[in-house]
Image (cartoon, rainbow, N blue to C red; front, side, top):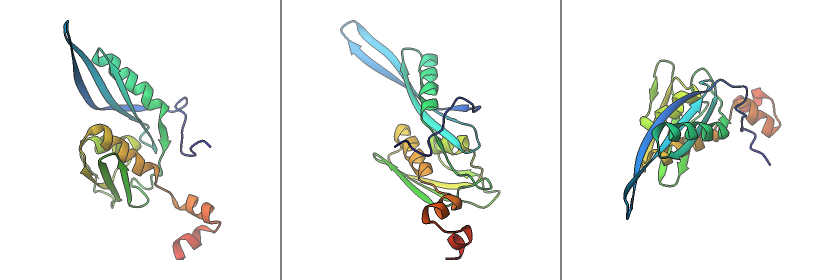
Length: 170
């Protein structure tokens, strides 16, 4: 069964943000060989986000590969009035993240890798905390995991088979 939050990148205008570039050195008998890995987050700043990893001998090629990979991993996230609908915990490997909705005017209170993901999805006000591993690969994946678990009131009502009033009033 396909993921219902999966989005196709064909008809969406995406903005990419480079999270990190890592230089990798491989030592061979002929000397050192350098290659690069890049992590990129793409989003339309209106509820769609994706992340990708690209590896190549040159930085520009690695970034281009990462952008292509990110466009294949897009998900839809509910954004309500510039924030998220509810608090959510996300985890990937050693990285754990907590994201909470915030009142208007708060801004994005988050660290480097998390900030790139949250800004790409279009969240304007959010409180976020990263715990455990600070590895950008894992933090990005944990943040996307937390965002993928978010549900809006309409989907909760549909799943429970009740009206929207019933969701909010018990």
